[in-house]
Length: 309
View (tube, one colour):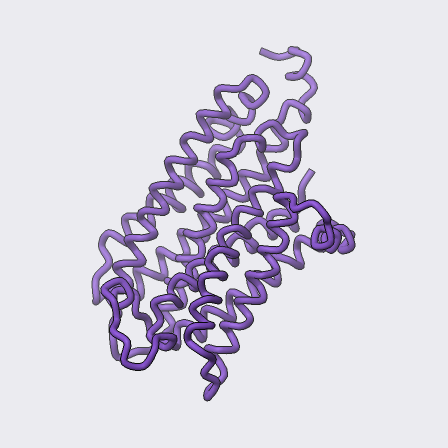
């Protein structure tokens, strides 16, 4: 039913959207966009990061989003079908998601230009407004990856509202992972330990919410007769190694441990490992989501007709 392009879009599109949301939120605290003489609030001071980070992370966001969109276009095979969403008279969830994805890509390109072009100082009020728009567009675009799966009415495992929630939280976590990776390669005389601690705390919260949503989703799978085979495959069957090893251990548990012991001396190493684990877990989640379709009752006639116990 799916191929590598589908998984590529779900992972890259979600990661790029999550990164756009995270960077946009950080831009709201960026002192570059504050009025001259304006004081720096407690939250803004806690999230202050070097300008070099934005110059590295925003272009990476553009590339990840663009490649994700290309995967989607190549997978659909008919670009006109995607373009039709922008001209649709009815504002459907799919159309909103398509617009959000396009907006996230455009806004990421705008912030990339602002971070890379020396001497260009756009109005701070405008950039703060764009940052608000970028955060909203990024979150909606991240949810869009889950809505694409939910639109497949023939797959019972995709019909839970919890699935887009899990994928959205995972996208935000992957976005934070990209920021962690960017920090590792930023040369600065300042450690920015306070900001890194705040970001680690944010990732801990997101990971906890993702784990709760994931547990609720698995419970929902077990509760339905049409989704019981998918639940069994997830917990004890063919998808179990990816679920327990790739997602639960590597993607959720390991980053929490690494971030818990983050210090000034080991920040670069810990963040790089945490970023790798978070991204690996995000990829594992998308592989699992795609793999669930093979265990749907519509794909297993023997279950549909009660031929197996």
